[in-house]
Length: 549
Image (cartoon, rainbow, N blue to C red; front, top):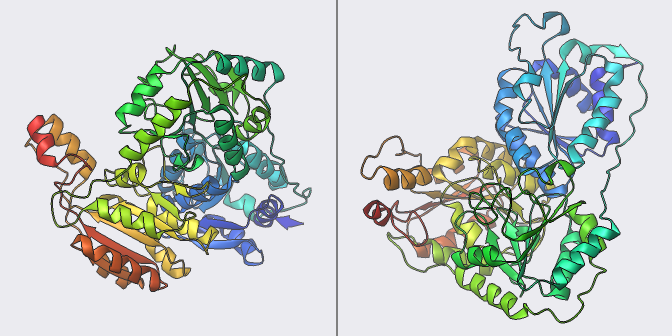
């Protein structure tokens, strides 16, 4: 006889869980008690949104479900921010929620929420376990649902009395990932399309990639001399200094790259959904009927034809597809080789940061310094805001597993994601980029980094405003500023108050020594860059945006 709490932990162990992220609650004390005797590492966080984002980062970097536990009501609603990220980003995650006791349900009991209704549109599957003997069944199924087809978040509600009940239950067996492979006829059709193409283009996106698959894709690009772009915030899928890399198909796309995608006669989209942001509001590829011949490769059949009607739909995971297609060779020397080289040259020009700008701190030289100093396996995490442009446009990703950033554009992601990444890879350099507004949405998770001795470096780009909103505000309603000014703490002092290391950068030349001191401290660190709000984009000032409006 075992309690429901014990069965939950045993099912997690059977499915290979090595750590969980949580904010504790009395609603699932039986699980916490079972974790006491488990080999699973428990990382306690400071807010449920941060905990869910940590679980998202774990799933994002490993391909295995990140695990998060929260309590009922406000705990669950706080965690919903991370669930929305995982859903839009196709990241495997399982959220366990302590629920009110069974006898109190449907009475609007203390902190009661109907989770099937609340999470129904932002989770892949939502279930409540009423019978503890079915825990092995439901937990293993949750792992399968979270990782199969298009990965995503699963939410499991755990009534408090169910967790303390003692039952006999079968031993939990691990889930086995299911791959979907392309058929020979589909590969033949793709080979024919490419052999007849004049200007093909490849876009990599989505999840279910791994290091081996990324290496195979690189070989395919070389064999066929294909220009390759990465979808929004999926840049770690291709080496940016490879001769075939054409750039980031995302927000603020290089105009030359946008023109190339539009001019392509065959677009091979592997793994991605090509949503609103990477498609430039459905203009690079017109929906539902693209001007280009579209070959869409996706692990979930439900995504094929959902937004775009492809010329050729291939229901396969990215890893399985590139393994199969790597065996195919072009009929002759591709005619577009010069265009591929031209695309890479355009990328190199586009990704070279400007060295000047308004104010005493210029981000261009700072990005140059980071490019020279950081190892190729350094992990970059960030949330959302204009500051992120400096990472996405000017950092040249070299390796798989080095990027954690939400395609959903959620603020507050960078710091908790960096904590999770450092816990996962303690020997690697982990950098979080955040704006001042972005950092303070989940900046309390810096305390989690201190508690677990995870020496991340958080670069806070502080311009005293909600920069992206101010930019749009000045463009649409010039001179009518409201609700976008921020009065911030001294972030370096805040870091020290938490028990970390803090630095303040007020001149460009200050950054390099400040960053080196932060790394050498051996502590979680915040390096605050005080950026002039006029430096709102790499190429345009706030005044220029206002005047043009």
